[in-house]
Length: 379
Image (tube, rainbow, N blue to C red; front, side, top):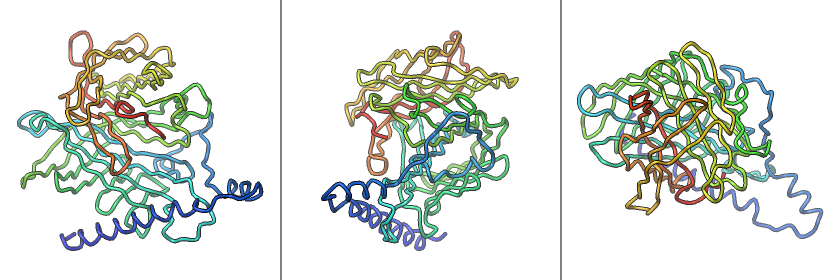
């Protein structure tokens, strides 16, 4: 796509995005004046699908979008080898959100689905996260998420699935990525066969699966040069209508491709005092045997904090993570991997490449996500 057409598309997308945002509040502009109006108003508000235990995930359908749920994301993280110099971390995320709208709003600009995309590069030589983001409402083929498999896009940014592989394209001013991810293992269903509890309340849950140990190849362009890269990656796909409990402020999460071919995911939800509200995780061994961890089997013990010079936020960037009878020390590729997404998702969080150590030896590579430290999340 030439530069002129790309610029026109971006301008058009921005205008439609702003129009959609402006249309949404007008659906609530007139207050209900009596009880019957209140009842009618409530019945017209978008109803979100619940996450319930016992639901069986089916592929390729569940690799696609689930528009009846409030929130969904496809999240790819990994490590890239440039052939020379230090390794790089990268992150590509596409979010789909369903706003709480009145269903009788006739406007063609009403944002029934919103797509947000983040991409970031963790380069120790740069010393801080290089990140970029976009947002658009799903309409006019400018942005969307397909139902029948992983295919989500905003303009030329896209992530799509081709049988047992995925392809991603991110074209931004700071950097561009053209990557292929080849699956070497089947999907890992998190929680109870894909039903992942996020708190004590039964409705605080998501449907969640991962595809670890993706083999990566492609190109990275920045600073006027393009180079071939290879590496490993991890994909998460998760959807929910009630992700955070009212007493939860955020979460700590790791996804680690372990060197022996096994894969570890672990998370904890933090309460208002910064303590342990809920936790979970899974370890799939190289032979396919799966261990699912209960909340009392997972612990995140902070070892070291880093303070952002821009926001003043303190993040525990180094952890001791206990999952079942295993213990891993988590250390960042470098400290300053803070991600400022206030122009899209409205928050600031830490998200970066980490190494996992066991018994003093490097045991794996992956990513750590720390949310709710800048301000409590509201999902």
